[in-house]
Length: 593
Image 1: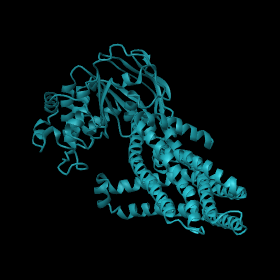
Image 2: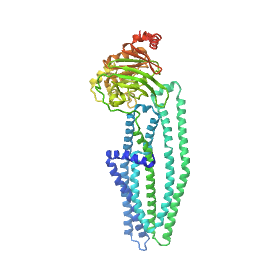
Image 3: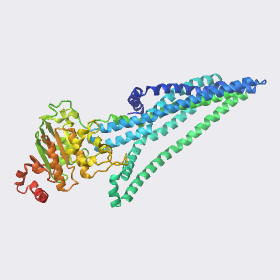
Image 4: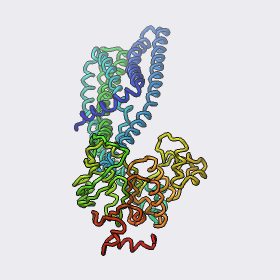
């Protein structure tokens, strides 16, 4: 997309929303541009009157004082008003930046999960963040736009004054302005062309610094002496940044020299021409000062207008990265079919499903077929890397299958409304995350629920005594990022809290995807057993490379080499000669017998 189309897209995307949210900003901007446009005309009007009065053969002190006083008064008045309004407008800058930042964050949460593991999508998120900072957001683009209008009014008035007394000065300013415009365009092109490279460097640098600061990496960094490596990695990115800026400045250096030469030529030509008119008696000293002021004002306004257009194009090129991200194409097609009896029982069937992660050529699942019936408890076991978690990601439609299909009550899940389908599942993943908010927020995720509901859930998962002992009970903050009195629950306690969150959702299908992998087998068995009692008559899927959940499940699916190698009950699989499950159970039997 060319620069003009990017600019149009940015204005179309941002400005209607900004007008809807803050009409006062635009009204204030219009008033301020009129004041800014009037400022140079105070001197243009009063200066020749004052100078001619001071150089007249007969000097009238009262007239001189009147013109001088009027010029100073209106100068101060307009400058104060302009400064006051500008300060008020600057207050909107943070509002617009924060609002856009929230919108980017909201869009991040709306992206299909597959895109959160996609390099191109992650790069686009970083470009959007960088684009917001580099563009300055709505306020800086709007300021440039209103500045163009203000400068247009200045140009009209100043050009009218010059056209009467010094028309050749208009030609000189136009020629040198053209040269200055081309130079500035070259500099903008250099910035825009290299913006993508800078975003990539900053993303890597930011990630390394985040890992250095995140307390979750602290133990490993210290125990394994990784600090030197982390600092070295960060230094490499700093060197890349330094090389980047050196290369950019080297490219701009000759253009900056040319710009200085053009400015000097403009000033020399202006003084030479107007000086000649004054010496030859074609204009008075007062008119000389007026034309000099008008010429400076015209040149500044012309540059401001042209550079303003270029500034809008440049800022819009950065801000367009936000538009691209906000309109980032979905990874999955969404259907609109409603789910019949969404709270009831459902049959889910994997039919010849194969799956390859985007950007790879390795099949993680191969021709997998399995049926999960309503109210059934299914244990999915297998060694690490067998495809168990991928099976759950496909079941929850975090990814779409590469081949085959997944059916819900005989209908391809792609045909269903995505949000309705997602409501069918309560999942506790192996890498579940608790938020640095209160215990209550971690369970209810912002929904308002009575204390009785929270107490009941915490009692079910065995956390009621622990939570009651905390400084603020259910309102105690998790972790210490935002509250020095925040608590760090043990791994098992965090898992129980995640299970409470899953129970609160009350979905018809519940899934535990190895959230207890860090626990010993006995503790894991107790959690699975307790969870199974809480599930009641719901459909349940338990994922593990250990066999904690197998004995109380209706069916067991043994994953190996990306497919279901064995399927049956615990007793049936134990009877298989040289079976994978039998070998696994034999190796782990000491924990369960």
